[in-house]
Image (cartoon, rainbow, N blue to C red; front, side, top):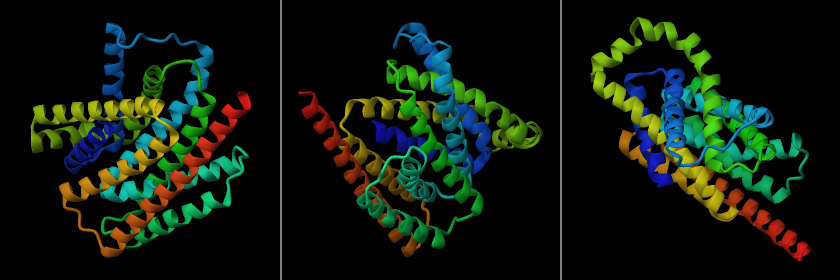
Amino acid sequence: MWYFLNVIFNILNKKVYNYFPYPYFVSVIHLLVGVVYCLVSWTVGLPQRAPINKELLVILTPVAFCHALGHVMSNVSFATVAVSFTHTIKALEPFFNAAASQFVLGHQIPLSLWLSLAPVVIGVSMASLTELSFNWTGFISAMISNIAFTYRSIYSKKAMTGMDSTNVYAYTSIIALLFCIPPAVLIEGPQLMQYGFKAAIAKVGLFKFLSDLFWIGMFYHLYNQLATNTLERVAPLTHAVGNVLKRVFVIGFSIVVFGNKISTQTGIGTAVAIAGVATYSLIKANMEEGKRKAALAAAS
């Protein structure tokens, strides 16, 4: 379900950008639909709303800010280059995670992990050099998204609380929405009011325009919620493999659905990058599993 919803979201999202190229506003809609969904779920008690206090709010705000920045920048990239290319660049996320762990958190990263990331960097470079839809806006925004999501994972570790993942994601979405609204109003507001909405409605009709916005928001929220719930229930190794396979699914389906022409070098570069991510994820998951077993042995 996680893969299925992710693929559907990416396809619908790009189709909307083909006639409504306003990523800041669309990012707000993604989060807004999710927040309404959370509020309705809380109202009917599925799940029960966990209480939040000032301390939790302070802990979750940096997570939500990084979530908002990463989300908006991903959408700017989706709107300007091919979906497959954005996901290839986003395959660099483990590299940024490793760099942040070593140089920000002070964790020692083994040489084997750094070596496994070399194919990722080489693959993304190969894909970028011959990508037919390449432009700097799409490339730089996807890279900023990588950095933002890296810091989100750092802050998320600090924000580990007794609250369940569904409630944490709901509160994160609400705070992230508040961060996303001002730039959307300032950057795209005037264009939307002058001609953006009118042009989209003229192309596809009011009902299709509104239903498209609703469904991409719903699929965005549900795939993220399912990802969060899934990762809470599986071992690190399963999580790692799942993340890599998800990207393969999205890249493959987007190329087929949109008929994106990719050069041989871009195809090889994408495959090399994904293989590198898989290797990195397997090594890291095995290390985590080893630490967990050592901790259990020490405790017993």
